[in-house]
Length: 271
Length: 343
Picture 1 (cartoon, rainbow over the protein chains, first blue to last red):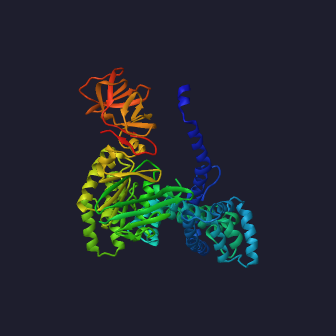
Picture 2 (picture 1 turned 135 degrees about the vertical axis):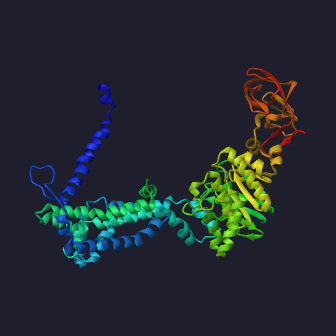
Picture 3 (picture 1 turned 180 degrees about the vertical axis):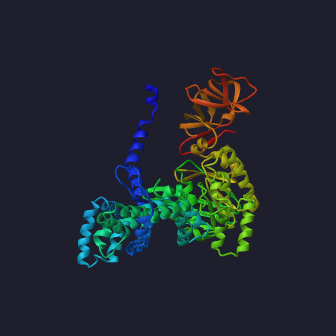
């Protein structure tokens, strides 16, 4: 009996219980609420299942408007971030210039401060620049959030490209630009793809910046969800929107896994 | 095919001299091995010829034209890297075809040349494979085909077989030798493996600490090493410290004739150059290793020095036996003087 107890993987069990309580159970509860029409105490499971609240949520024009706003904002922010950060990442990976390490660390330091306080101070600045309540304001604040990821990840990716591969390309006649285009970029692409995808997903779910700088005029999907959770007595509205908000990230992550393969994705994240 | 000349070429990284000024001529169609230990400057020299490092001083002349400061993509050279450096996002065909496509050759011509190059290295049928699906040896063949397809004037090979197992290395170096002879391409081959250099090269350039120690054919280098470094680096050599005095050298109990100035000297004898003779020095056998064609005996000399001797395998020798040996052929090295060689 004692031997059997000793053979048990106690840390594993504790971790599993922790995951069930703090990760799976809340997710399960949200899922159950999203498909619940009636749930009365003391029943453990809903007394009536159904899609009634899905139809109610999805027929609202403001929900769709917020969804498209979020998609457009995420696409613009990801595109701009790529345009600004990828050349910078290449410079950090392949060039030597004064203050290189300091610059790299500065992106990290920006994320070391409490984000809410940082965004409030930026929002105050934006107020004087008439950027509050505008798309431009939301784009800028969300763009700032993406810099760390879009610089650090691609920098690691560019650094990971074998110098010999680049030299071999130059050796067979490629100009520096051709070396970059035909060898460096394709080699770093899986990791860059992972960074772009994560930027898109993070931006889609970004709440604090959009709320402090954009609301109420720029209504994104997470803000819509917040208002539904805070202002609606019916729990199902928030639950339906929460489950619906999973869809883009789930599709994107599955797509990324299919296109890039799990090893490339892990490589992009520094594994 | 071309003639390569290095004239006073040197390379410094900050205050460190990686390659001291050196000159070297390589004739058309010759295969020359740069041989030396790690840090001897051989790879840096090769990279300067390939254009990946700019020389601090000197000229790199290919058919009389100085290319020392020309970018790699504009040089008539092609390099095979130790790491193979195949582009993993391209298949075998695309890897070999890449250089030809950059030259904007018609697709039919590209196809024909690539297939010919792959056939030359024994990889026909592999063109659609990813480099990741190939073995180390096959990857290196693709890297060789990628270079040869461009018909470079000079082929540079930087320890191309270092990551392969011994059996594969031997097979590939024979294939490389055959291809090189068939095409008559001037080739510079960097290696730290002396057996590779001795088996492959028309001439060997032995390098140490950024300088050339000796240039010669494999036979010359093996039989007549011109410096103690080369003597100790190529093959197995007993380097016995001793004293030269009155036309003789005394070392480890041996006393041999050597027409060299008095002072500290090193007696160098290859294991196969000892003979068993009644009047020889008595040495005690510490270990015997059967190397197939002969026995290798590790013995202790008169002053306790370790001496390695090759013995005919038909003779019975055991640990603890006393052997009487004498050097039949030897060299004596003394700093600042030309080496003395026995007849």
